[in-house]
Length: 137
Image 1 (cartoon, helix red, strand yellow):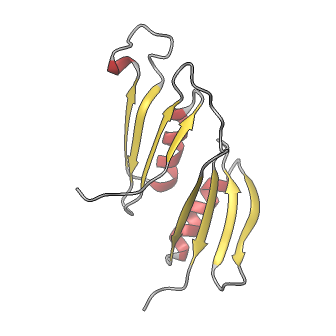
Image 2 (cartoon, rainbow, N blue to C red):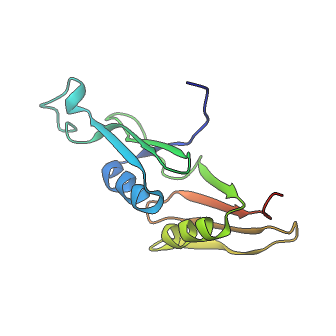
Image 3 (cartoon, rainbow, N blue to C red):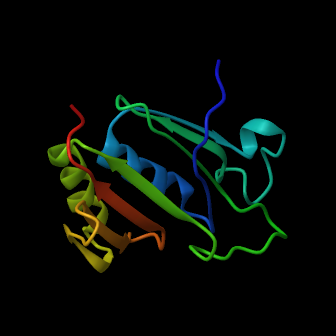
């Protein structure tokens, strides 16, 4: 397996719902493991997600988990996820799903550098940037 770079998002207690939402946006295979499956079956957090990974048909990988007890959760403060490419239809579809229930801070439209670009925060407080470049020859 080669190295890969992907975002890892921490959630308060809704990682399962968030990761299922992202699967609905991007498709793919979602694997979720709970704290209970890894040695804490009777703990209050047993049903929370210790590790989740979504692998999509487009080659995206998104990981996430619920914040373990005792750790501080600061949603969206130090993460933004960037989606970029030249398949406008695909990226506009993701944009439409990500903005549903979220907030648009920069509308997805042509920018001064020539690409379509937009920024939003989804309904889980995660910031997203979408950049649609011209198709490569």
